[in-house]
Length: 71
Image (cartoon, rainbow, N blue to C red; front, side, top):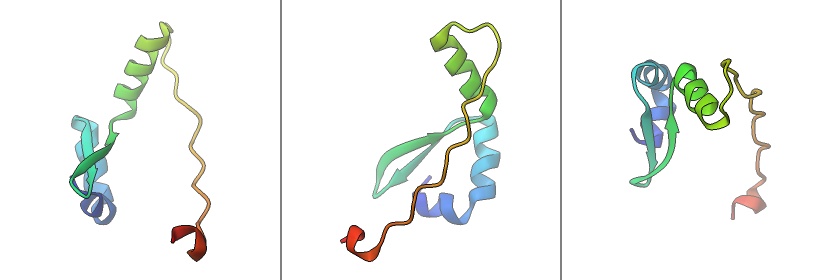
């Protein structure tokens, strides 16, 4: 899925990610994967060897960049 499609179809992205991981591409290159929280917990617990599911703390939104930082 393109980043543009993900942006304008965020609800659809969430629905798709609930059933399978979704690769999001920017300029034709894969940049992120969106997956269901259950799959994330399974992967995280498998890596750490934890017996109970855990979830990472919410991610804070990135600070907005100024015009000079974008250039």
